[in-house]
Length: 155
Image 1 (cartoon, rainbow, N blue to C red):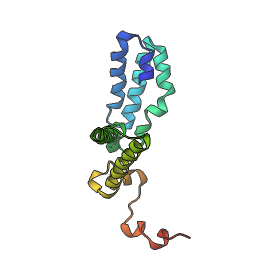
Image 2: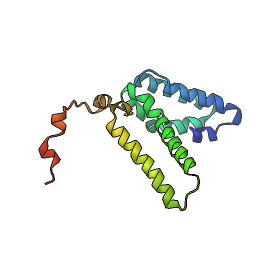
Image 3: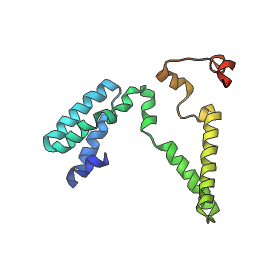
Image 4: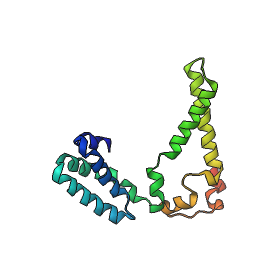
C-alpha cells in the first residue's frame, strides 16, 4: 500500500488508505472481488495512477481469498513475527555487548530454533492448526497413515 500512497496527493492519502482497507473487510471472496472493483473504479476517477497500480497488483492483493476465510486474519497478521523479533531483542538486551557478530548470530539462531521447536511440539501454539490446514489440503490423515514405516526408511 505504501507504493500506492506514494503517488497520492498528501491530503488524500488517508482517504485512499481507508478505501483500500474496505476491500479486506469483506466477509467472503466474492464480496472482496466486488469491493476491489468498486474501489478501483472510484479511485480511478480522481487518481488514475492509483487505479492502474491496484489493477496491476490485483492477483497479489487478493491472493488471500484462495484460502479459507478462517485463515484470512492470520495471513494478514504480522503478530507472530513481531513477537519473535521482540523475544530476540529482549534476549540481546539482557546480554548487552557481544564480542563479535557471530555471537549475536548464535544467540538469535538459538531463539529461532527454540521457537521452531515449540511450534512443532505444542499443538495449541501452532499458528495454523492441523485441522485448519486440512481445509486447504482436503486431506484427513490419521497418525498411522502419516507414520507408515515404509515412508520413514531411506531407500
